[in-house]
Length: 318
Image: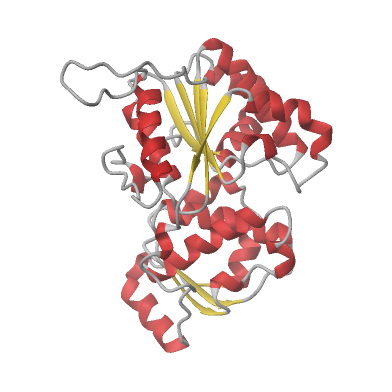
């Protein structure tokens, strides 16, 4: 689990230079420049002449928090920080991977593991229950004083973490203490995954699906959607990446809308891992961008579901 705390394969070569900032949204290039400063520990890049020095910018906090919509390149920038920072000990993982590590090792052993680390990158930072709130705030609170830098992405500003999910007012002190470690950097933009594709997930006929599975060879999966959903309930989400090891295409037959939120959230975690591995999805039945009910999309996990929809659309077009 610890060895897996590196950027996903699709971001192996992610750099600040390869981040394509959209000129229509100046915040993208502005944030990129600030993150370069954060990653290298230097000041802002000098402009306007060979001997002209740039004014020293404000000192950044121990952590940077990238807040923005889906598909604006937050994970790319997070991976760029990881690759650019000249650190001996650095880790990159999703929020669920860090909490799963605490569950596997215990809190104190996890603190000992990360103590002295130069950098922790946390992708898709979400606080969905009081237990995760307490674990992550305590963990980060112990690491920051030892010199660990933090970089995180989310679709929710750190001061609003936990809103709509549980009685956040009971945990405001912990949430605010954690957010004080971060400088929030807002990234505006449109979802790049939607720029070159239609707005809905592709649905195949039974015949087209059979052809897709056959052409995928022995490494293409072929499962009834209901069976996959049941199986995910028997595996911890931190292990979903192992389920996909070696799979080159995911085939899902007879997709249907969810009627259970726990099952839907497990599927979201599965989609995240499939997207990290860039595995194409082929499906029959209900379009995969329609599997979450209106009640789910209007509830406290709305942003998680919308992220999954964005990724599912892209994977069915890939």
